[in-house]
Image (cartoon, rainbow, N blue to C red; front, side, top):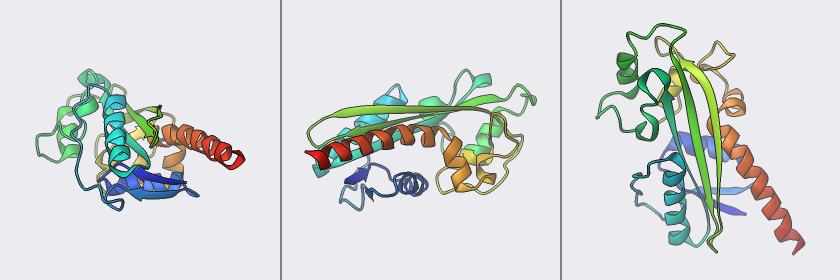
Length: 198
């Protein structure tokens, strides 16, 4: 089964291909879709669905898109759906730590949220979500994948390491995106099995 992943983010593509091993996964660019879709939805689900619909319509194939973000308790849920854009051109991690400079350890709670949308060529739509709680480190630790900058400061609940200090497998087993993709994978396996029986 071929799936087009609606992303320009190389870090997300690496994660997606690993989590959907056994499926033929192409990036939108590899499928000939070079346009970006404006993420103007008010929720992660709305943004993911908009991107997946666009790529499914352009390619006539199954399309998957995700929208994820960091929601910081002390900042009333910011940056949320504006996660990639809220630093106004500044370094995201640096800006986030600056906003949190007066917030002490123990009060630096946050969560990552991910919505993964899948759209079939026939217009079938499903959304899967994943959330992970944690806290923000006082300084960056580890090496993040490209365009996944917050991994150097996010420490999942019950752990001492940031996402960036974990192996790829360990991070994917815990992460918001990993949780949503596992739900989606189970759905895709069910669909694939039904097609084989038809």
